[in-house]
Length: 244
Length: 324
Image (tube, rainbow over all chains, first blue to last red; front, side):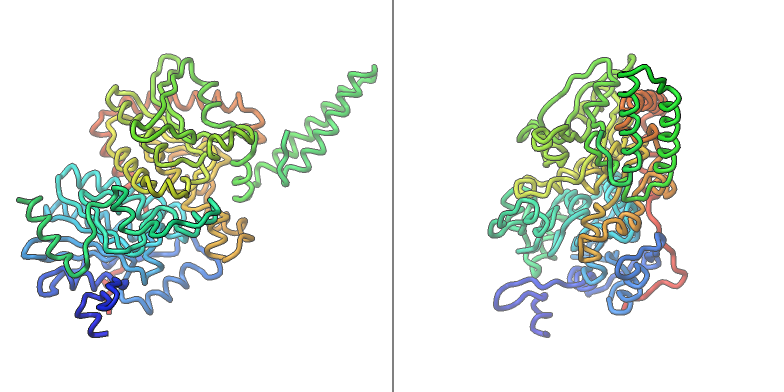
């Protein structure tokens, strides 16, 4: 385990990038692992009185007991390579990294914070998509985050989008694909529809390597793929040039 | 006429009505009082059925095989319409149509999902499920509208964006995301109507606007009730429950403040009186264009972004939760 941690949770034998949490990315990116968390006070609420096999409330209570994060996205600010950087990182351990109202609101506030501070924004996506238990409110977060990103673009503040394993559904179809620069970790699953849904629709086997980072790079939807142990220095290179 | 399961009581009444009319045309029996009685029975039964529809029943009505689609409304409402094709990048998607339209001296750009009216056409239109080209065609038309200062009217009716290999290769997610960003700051009014099915990303991909209205018997949701059932209930059998849980009907959506209003449909839903529906739709579009065209551009855009900025429900905890 220690060997894994020292190696950025990349398998030393097969180079596999294990899924890591929001705080692992903060530790990896911020100088001396020093950063400040923001908007933690925003919490999900079961306002639709949702119930499938469980209630949404039960799911929220269960996840808050075991997950190290307070929502599917956490927002931090600090210095990376000596420069201001705001990072919003998703966490798959929180209801599959799904996007509900709180994810949308934290992103919206992160964007407004970036506009105010003129600090570049990095969003690290890792999500199964929109959160079903908030129904259309979740769907509207696609519009909300994209609308706020339009504002960020007008303010000419850089927005970098990193896609990690997995990024699918409403997250891919909104902020994850809207970076000034889009990039991914190696071999991540990235797509709009999930592979199972596609297979059931077209009733055919999916080609080898379909919907991987490498597939998206080949089809023109990513600027580059970056290994996790080179992420911080690559970010420095990009932001150093963008911000002169 | 095609009757859905919950409309069966009406089917019997309509059959009786047809028979009596037949009898009336054959002999000199005075059937007028009987016809009158049956017609008032039909009206009473219709009121009973359609005033208490469940979420799932509205989903079924939104998918009624005789329901009017985008091109029907365009044909009925517009004095002139020039359809424009293609995304200028790959091809012309048949599941999203669009073009230049004019109603009583008001010009605008219209974009909408299109389903087929028979088996062959349903295939041709890919059941209203667009590929990335459809969203990119829509994007091109929106930019055209902005350039010539024309308002945009979108008609949404899709079971979802198409989940296929080629759709992924050509960036379905990117196409939808790009449209959302384009629509957020397009410098011309955008009016959106859910005229049938409003399924998830495929719907909102042409659904961000200054004014969003739902027809009475439509739905708008993050996922279809069937898929929701299969994922959360792990079975396809809970679509009715899923439809209720999703609160996907127009009245819920309006109550939540996620849409701006509801367009009433004629008794028996849009497909029973399509011309009447088209007339009230036409009137509504004209009113909305007139209203939104008066708002200065900067104010329009600020209001549009502010509207979406406010969407979401959450609590603000006094004590910040400190994660472990």
